[in-house]
Length: 483
Image 1 (cartoon, one colour):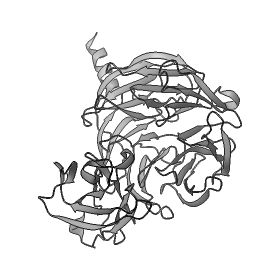
Image 2: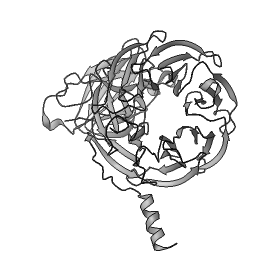
Image 3: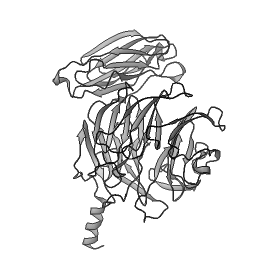
Image 4: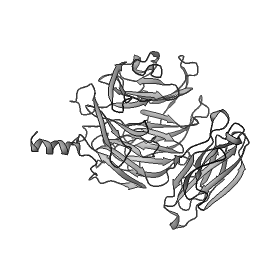
């Protein structure tokens, strides 16, 4: 290889280069960026979807590109290491080119409108194309609770969905069901219900899957922009977010406590007027990729009043066209956010405050269920007098002790693990949860600038006859206070 070729190859990889972008950053920092295929000028894209996996304790990024899918070991997020790239089907001549990714166990699954689904094994630690199956699909969605993969759009019957069982066989999954009543751009299968984004009809539809493979339509609602791109629900399936991908489209939040009658309760639009793309809910935060505006994290602890927590702009592009940040993945245990920008590559971003992280080991109680701590009343910010720590998933009417401290720990005691360091300053609050296993403790944050950047650690310990020595305990909860 000539010296010139070596230089060209090195420039193409551009590994870990910090971007020379006019980045607009609020309460976030760039950890790393990798642009293996630089040079894409809008509207052409060299990158599409994004996903993440944990394989043998390593955090893995799954990065679809124009020509295939790259896998990075992000165990050291400041220095991602490429594990390999799996070529994918399709012509590269069109300006827009997309692949989407999801996973189950140690297998990644890739969809494209240019060929069948790919099953990629990471069992050996490096990616290997294990099989192809199904048909052309615009996107795909795996229900982690059932191992059912829903292939959406493309050449699936009626442009709807084909459901496969990747839990039964990860490389040759049996086909279980189809849905063909409408074109489905994307969906979230979530246990008893599946939430369909029917972009052509501009609606979100809820399917009852409790008698699977029978799928029953429960409700259908037109979203505000009538161009429904994706839908996602919170852990309790009481709150749903939808995105509308029309120019300048926004998020909408819905109360879905009653699945037959979803109620729209609020919207959130990019402050720059950019177009929303993909949104996900984790805890009390909605994470959003928003094309030319990059990435947002939005506080939804009070869903009627969504608040911006942090943002990071991956793109030098502006306006409401379809360029910039395609996808975000917020579910890695480290709390790092994976982003793909259609033109500028793979980014790892860390929220610097406001977005909480669960850490440490929980001790389950009755039925193998552990209590949990989250926040309410608005994200942690100086002068947030309504900020609260919320206990959920405890045994009904159980007494609890909530520890709020300044440092983390991992201390075995009385059959549980203490995740808050009680040798450092801490406060203990005692009380009792209600019949649903919930309670809230107000922790007002005073209007003192010096508190910005401070970190709150919390853990709840509850009485539970089914737990070790009659106790159950949550994982640790950690959040940094925003200025």
